[in-house]
Length: 449
Image 1 (tube, one colour):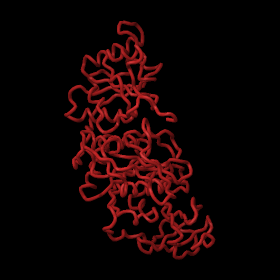
Image 2 (cartoon, helix red, strand yellow):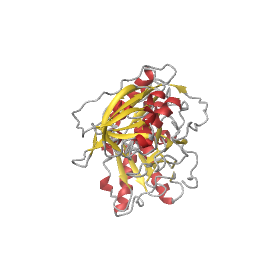
Image 3 (cartoon, helix red, strand yellow):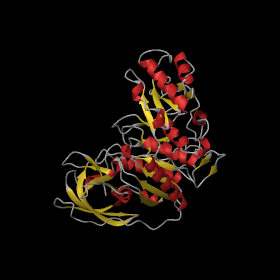
């Protein structure tokens, strides 16, 4: 069916679709499509459906429909033994949400099955199964939720999945991706297959949503992407790489950071190049060359302690010693330092606020509670060897002196090593080890960042 034969935007229609998933009928309002050769509809449940015009069997105008009207939904196709198996693990976030047009709020609403049903030709890529883990905003997730995701990935591989896609909210996606990477790769091992995190910045019922592009690309990577080596690729994040809607970036889950609150191209790779980029209009991926790995595949990932007390504090003109808990009340202190990792302090004998901070840090050292520093600057290394201030911090037990990790990855790493009995000795030394490829090689950011 040609574009000129399609119904105009704003009209309510019932369509008959013929695809690999069988013959189905859908009703809703036609909205503007982002690409030629597609019909986009807002369905009766508020969800968007994109139909390739080649699959469009027929359509007819209808009166306005309401959510009580029921239409057939596609049945999962029979297993194609020539295709790999991919598991979609659903955790919530904007990719699973829609706008409540009465209140203006965005609400988590869609299931994993509904997400898959919205992506054209998805049955041609892989045999798909779903795991509806929970439906939470990512800023509500805790280490216990990381453990649930980790266990769900193990379950998927145990049940024969070649790769796993995790649909996740974007605000803390990079932290969950780092947590899962450490769980599978933190002790010199690697997962059985690709683990991909994806999400969207725009809810799935909006015409500008990035959900379908990101989800399709993530499923393709899980089905066809290279086997992970465990060196920085134990997990990856696939999200938009441009504003035009058709390009994605594949970023190491240990080097990712959300850098914009609302833009679709919100994620950046910190300290290393993206693994690859892909234009979905291209017929083939530019896959990285497969690398050999000395790591053995494991089927038993690690997990995180769920009762850790890690205090985070921000260095700056208003930091006071009383903002830092007593050492006996926490398992670790993480300070977000300025520049190369500094904070306001003076010699321990000094009077005033900066001397108070030095004395508080000394009490942490005396109590044996580790103090770590991460960079507020996001990009660039921690280096406490450059200025006398940094050397003073080291004498007070703050460290390590040099690291080259993305700051949120560093925070997750602290939680990981605190929960593993193998790292019960010098925690600063364990923190400096390159456990899963999280340490970037260069101390200086490449030109162009």
